[in-house]
Amino acid sequence: MPSDPSRLIYVVDDDLAVLHSTRFLLESEGHQVETFADGRELLAAFPGPSPAFVLLDQVMPGMKGLEVYARLRDVDVHVPVVLITGHPDPGIRTRARPAGVPLIEKPLAFDALLAMLAADGAATGPALQV
Image 1 (cartoon, rainbow, N blue to C red):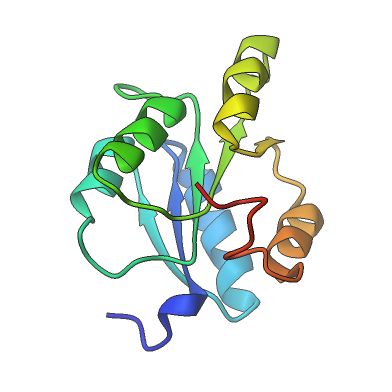
Image 2 (image 1 turned 180 degrees about the vertical axis):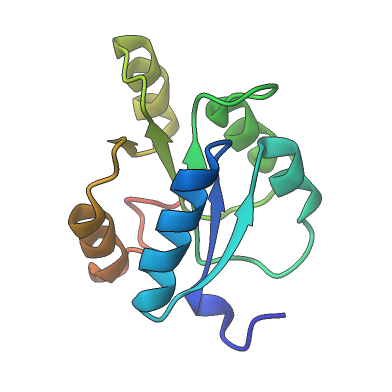
């Protein structure tokens, strides 16, 4: 169990290179990171330590990111989620926006991601609250 749950970030992506590089970046900034290869692995982590933030890939085998997000809400998990995608089509943005899920494109702009995490209230603020 992490020593500081407010620093815990879950990263979900089927691309191992993305998981490893994102984990390295976030840990180098002092965050604790748990990685998951798909949405089912993430959902199995609940209930458990509640992360401050979930970085969730949209395009994965099995459940897509927005489906995982909906399932989190169905089981009453309220954690800030940011959707990531390497396939940014307008349909994903159209579905993510009303759900209140921010979307960032791959390759990840790590400076923008770190700024989002460092922004006042980013981990708990209404802009990312689900």
